[in-house]
Every structure is written in structure tokens, then in C-alpha cells.
Image (cartoon, rainbow, N blue to C red; front, side, top):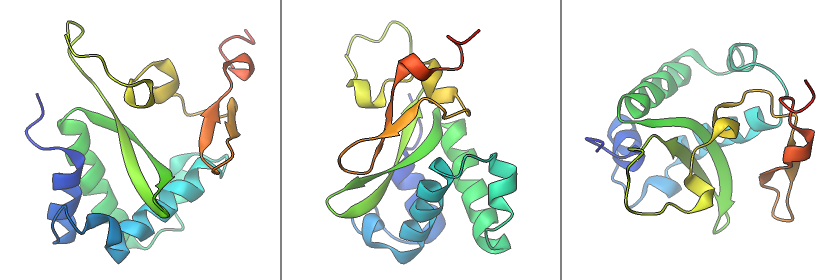
Length: 137
């Protein structure tokens, strides 16, 4: 069980509340960088060189705190006309509550290749497992 959820963690680092988080300009900038990274076909270290040092440090602290609470692999989707940051979550294998497939982590969640991704009608990434690099071996 996490001590904090990503909304609380991000809001704490940005100095706002979870209720207004999606409208926070810094949140939208971070989400924008994640969105761009998803389609950059580059490694994070190469991509992150373009991010301002102060913002990069803030992102580093946010993602570290999220990982420590079991949330990993941040990604960005569009929801209600705004960019929204979502995370995979590590859960107990004996969990009695089903998770929606959208947030259920699997090997694809941890994959950095992204060569299996396409884009759906809303502009969000979608997995096309027939293009997975693991199957090419």
C-alpha cells in the first residue's frame, strides 16, 4: 500500500492541491515533456538534456518519490482536453481487486523500446504486440 499517490506527490512538489493539479502550468509543462518523450524514439538521458535544469531536478524528485511508493513508468495521455500523467503501479500478486487493463502493469509497461507503439484516434499511444521486439528474437 503506497504512502502517497502520484497526485499527492506531484502536487506537493509543485506547491498546489490535487484539485487544481491538471490546470497547473508546471504540471502541463512536465506532461508535455513526457508526451514529447513518448514519440522521440530516444533514450531518456538524451531527451532530458533539453529540459531546464531546475525543472529536470523537480521531475527527478517527483519520479523518485513516485517509484518509492510503487508507481513507475510515467506516461502522458489526453483526457478532457488536457494532458494527464499516468503511472504503472506495482501491486501485490494476491490482490483481490481487478485492475483495468489501462493501468495493469506488464512487461510492456517497463519496455523502453516503444517500437511496438502506434497512435489511436485520440493521439494516444497504443500497443501493437505483433511488432514487439521480444517476438523478433
